[in-house]
Length: 125
Image 1: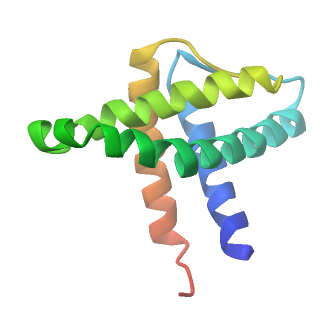
Image 2: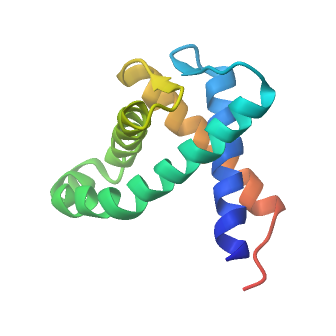
């Protein structure tokens, strides 16, 4: 359970960094506490999307993985961030990604920040 909470908090920090750095990724809220709660909830939605949808998309795009030598992963990650934005809108969370280019840049930042935080905060496995 602790591992799940830690991964969710790392994803929330990575999404927060992307929202802070990329102009087309918006995180709105009245105060710091509301934004922090929104980030955690968006990180949960992001985790669910990556757990259920991403493996199916990767399976169906296997020929593109081979053809592009894996570079299609960046596009798939951007699409997962756009899907997270859509699902967050349906859940009335104040998180929005406005277009493919901000999603692509945001997914790169989320990947880098999450990777860095996972290197700093090690699992006990």
